[in-house]
Image (cartoon, rainbow over all chains, first blue to last red; front, top):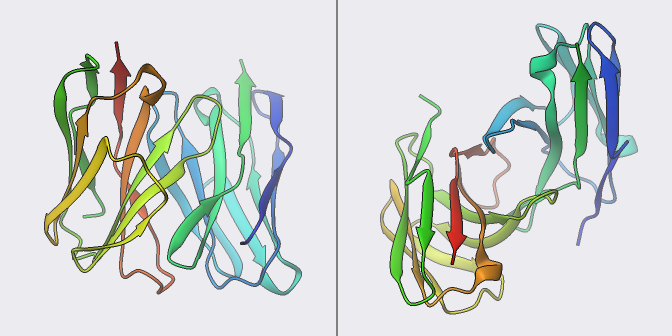
Length: 107
Length: 114
């Protein structure tokens, strides 16, 4: 089955800093999602981005499907950005998650 | 409305109890999912329902019994659980199984087995 790998596994930032999270996948896909899991466990949809670039406020994402990776950019980070960021892809009817990047933003 | 609603939010149960987790969506989605998540790990797929029929069972022990009474509802019946079954249980839905669309998750049920 498809392998989904995220990097880095952990990231500590000072408030106001920028960061880039990466998601690599081992097989061709025509779908990819980014989620933010908050400390209460809720998985919040950030982007559905099979290809191209999308922006939503301080967050943006780019997927290059032909090269099998996606990037999530967080600019001017805030303490509320803390939590775990997952990318996930559908294959064979299953939504398969990467291992996540745990982000901690310090005031 | 992109909401998936799960109840209860928290559940503590003994190993001899029977309980049920409930999930509801009103987005017209025809695929619904149960995931289990342990601390510091990604969600792991348990079951997939497509058009109200069970299509994927990831070799889940029979003490977990899913049910899809209609296209909007998904239940997970729990019986004779073990302490290692304590976890966050997440429900999700998407347009149709096998067709790439965006998936949406409920807020989860945090289950503790004592």
